[in-house]
Length: 284
Ligand SMILES: Nc1nc(=O)c2c([nH]1)NC[C@@H]1CN(c3ccc(C(=O)N[C@@H](CCC(=O)O)C(=O)O)cc3)C=[N+]21
Image 1 (cartoon, rainbow, N blue to C red):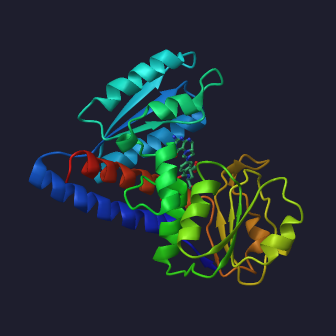
Image 2 (image 1 turned 60 degrees about the vertical axis):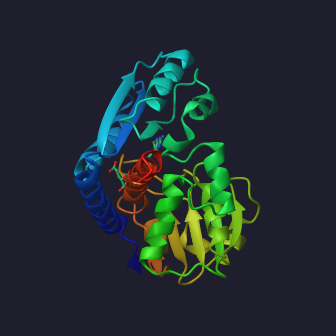
Image 3 (image 1 turned 135 degrees about the vertical axis):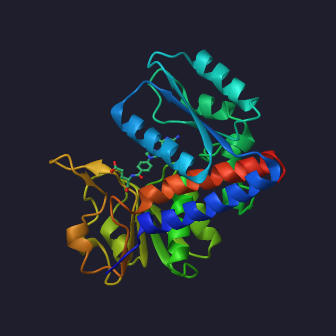
């Protein structure tokens, strides 16, 4: 078993982003800017947002955090996004999800300027990902997974890959990226019949189903590669993934740990998208 070390690879990505930003700053006197909007202050959101802000500072991205009250109206959020769309110093806009129930999330995402959509959540960006358009701002988790697999020189062409989860922000863009790499992709979900039959045949299994310790050793084949997108809390409030690490560990060739796998890669890709959006917006 080899660990796909997201902590290590994300640091490498951040080092490279930091270097590029320093060079651009030297030449243009400008640095990328990221605006983060949070509605309400639930603790989990706060922790992620703080981590993003800290890592922005580390690579030289200027970040601004806007905390709106939990009862913020859709109109107020849309007005805030309009201001940020027109703000020269803001290259990327991230609206932390989930939003409170009374807010229509697609309406909010739709309001973000296409070139500032650093989460890659807008329909146009997902469309570009499907078409293999290099100018896409790619959803951060799938982009991070692809970067991690490439860093470890894991070939994808001709591989049988099962993706468990069909969300707009992980499963769907992940599937498109893998198809474009020449993999044969099966997309499953919580209602899939005979799931283990499918996962047992897969060279790579990507699990994003949001159920603690869901994927077990008897569901995979020998030497499978396992990517665990889940972040759950177990009965002892310890962070755990969607994969039962103990039960699969002796069977896998590669596996991402939780924590320290996909999570850090996701944030690194957010920084990367912010730099990309800055370069597109400022024509660098
Ligand atoms: N608009 C938006 N974009 C997001 O990208 C987004 C979001 N909303 N809402 C919440 C989720 C969650 N998310 C995480 C990213 C990294 C870690 C991460 O780095 N986790 C560490 C562990 C952190 C810990 O110990 O708590 C790890 O896996 O090693 C976790 C969670 C991004 N999200």
